[in-house]
Length: 272
Image (cartoon, rainbow, N blue to C red; front, side, top):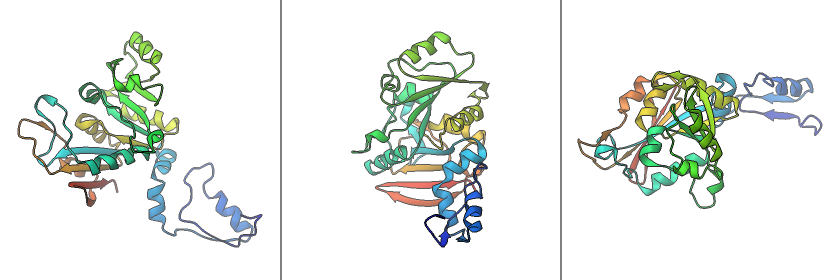
């Protein structure tokens, strides 16, 4: 811009990365260029929230996605999986996946649902994020869809340092990358896992792992935003309970917006 003879620059916000923070603006001003900052700064920070989290916190921005019925349930009696939300919501969830660097679930979700965790929007199949499983004991089955598709879509499994070495070798032979962290309350040291993701360049992490993974991340203070999808259906008193909406507020995530997607209601919670 200096060489091109630009005379005025308008920027939304600076880059918090200490390797470059403020240096570009300083060079422009030293060259006599007028620099105005802070224009639509809040919007810019929102767009760049993943990058900001990684360079300031050392971990990705964590977005928790939860779906449950109007009566607060996430599965049929006995943990039997059920499609809760409508087609419009499912399409938007796939778009959320495409906009994320990685998507995370717990081993319980893998064993119960055998998910693929890919983006299946037409024309966007190549935008599938890295699939990540929290699996302290390395119980991920070799026949799971995540494992069978690991050579097409990157799949990482976080295991405890004392997890079986033979199971790690089997998963690696299938194309899965195994990353070990220390054990922590409820399974693994989630802070270590997220720091490792940040060191690998992951800026946005979408969590789809059900109430157990959600509760663990919330308890550790590692959730930056949450999206609760509420479908207009009742699963009954014997169905599996989801996460109470009040739990998000107690975790420092007040509700900031609400919208309707198809027949479902999307409620967004954001850390201040």
